[in-house]
Image 1 (cartoon, helix red, strand yellow):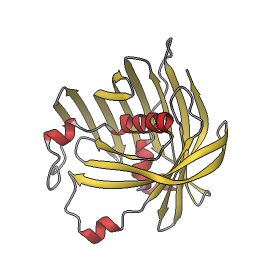
Image 2 (cartoon, rainbow, N blue to C red; image 1 turned 90 degrees about the vertical axis):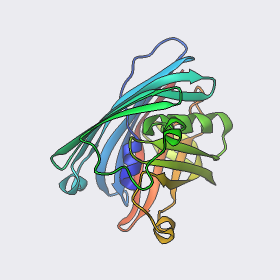
Image 3 (cartoon, rainbow, N blue to C red; image 1 turned 120 degrees about the horizontal axis):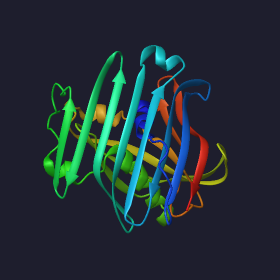
Image 4 (cartoon, rainbow, N blue to C red; image 1 turned 90 degrees about the horizontal axis):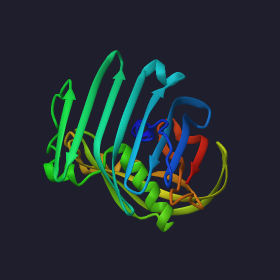
Amino acid sequence: MIRVALCAFVGLLCATSANAETVRLEYEASVLNLVTLGRAGISARIDASAYAADGSVATSGLAALFDDTRITVRAGGRVSGAALGWTRYDLEHAYARKSRNVAMRRAGAQVTSTITPRFGDMGSPPASPAQQAASHDPLTALLAMSRAIGRGRICAGAFPVFDGRQHYQLVLSPAARGRYRGGGYDGEAIVCALRYRPVSGFKPMSAEERARIPEARIWFADPAVAGFAAPLRIAVPTPLGEGRIDVKRFEVRP
């Protein structure tokens, strides 16, 4: 779960323009707030008609000895009011002296994917064309979630995601309020419970295996800036203790 969360927090710098929200966030992942596992960043430009983001994520410290992961990712698409509609998603994933590239394009209700090398299987059952088209890519899902919290200030909703093979939902529900200090932010936060719900494109899972998927907590900045509630922290219980991703640099401006 901590790796899934880390890979969701990806992105680097996009140029600014008039009437655009500019997001720049950098994160550090750790266990028990002591052992560093990796670093990631988010930065994007979102204006009235389009958005774009590109970035990277990498394991570091002790984690790199066991899982040396390097990811670069790009996503972009259209903006329609509060909604984001992705049209392109590209991921390069290097791990354990292996690599895989995923290129997805969405046009209307059709998603096309080029995956090199191909996955050995696409799960049972595989993600259907309808599920793929109705989902966000992983990076767009995080941006959409932050915009939804920024506008409604309510932890609610299921955000469907498709990453080229797996289709899942990120489900938010109310948890608490908190205060976050760090990374250039010092203020109130909306804390949501976050459930990771596999749907298709996975190996068959028993009800017991599904029940063991941990519930995470995700913290969003409150108040939002330019309608964007920046994700500040995600905390996940692990066998080694609490795994966390904390913001280390914070900049959101209109």
